[in-house]
Picture 1 (cartoon, rainbow, N blue to C red):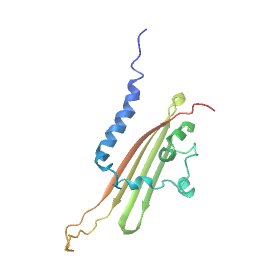
Picture 2: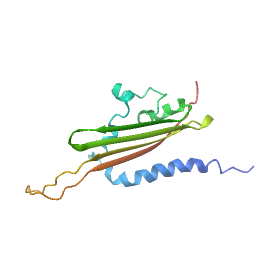
Picture 3: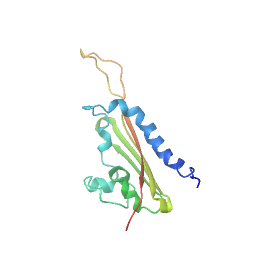
Picture 4: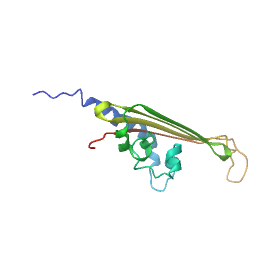
Length: 149
């Protein structure tokens, strides 16, 4: 009996995407570093309205961030976009998309981006230096499948 490798190659694609997106962030994963705190911000009106207690919801595209297994209940294509402006020119962008794969479950992709306007730089002795900006980016690939009723 010959093994069909064509089905397995599709499993490698999400794994390589996850590894590729994780490589730039690996140096920042040291204990005590808080460079990725922005990924804990609530996204979407429904999860925000529930105070972030969204892990039990299984019919919303925002489950990508809270409980990817909940994607298994989605049987169509869904998208979610969010734009948020805070004080001092801080902005937060979010985009998520989920697509049903029929009997194989649902795949999802999300992108989070936080950025600032120009910030006036200062040296250690208080002298004005060049302005700079700050930004963070995170992406995730998710998959969920309903196993039983």
